[in-house]
Image 1 (cartoon, rainbow, N blue to C red):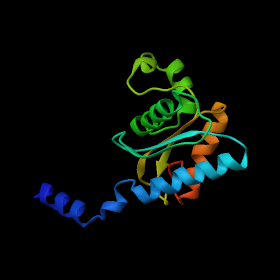
Image 2 (cartoon, one colour):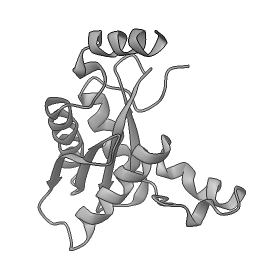
Image 3 (tube, helix red, strand yellow):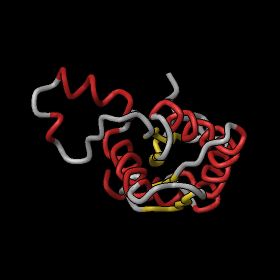
Length: 154
């Protein structure tokens, strides 16, 4: 009976409330790129869903080889772990074995994506190509431009 009730609740929940959609991902990429252009920067930007699957990517002009792959790794890391890559270095130092776990990136630039109310984690954004703090700021600006949150509501 409980399984049936859970199935009904899931079926009644709109799909858009459960996943990061292409329109939101596009808005994130465009918001990050606008932020970068305003600062005279260039980033490779990747937006992934909770499964780490790319929803949108964009390599701005001037990015070197490997930057897109690195942005994807940052995005996948935060999709997997649920917290920014900026916190993964400390987590790796404080938690034996964490540095060797799958999808751990200890360089800032990966930021989780939460729903507009901050309650539901939707995926991750990775930016690469500039200083790590600038990559992280770009990702956060893109998330905000899409009307989403980069932190869980408290």
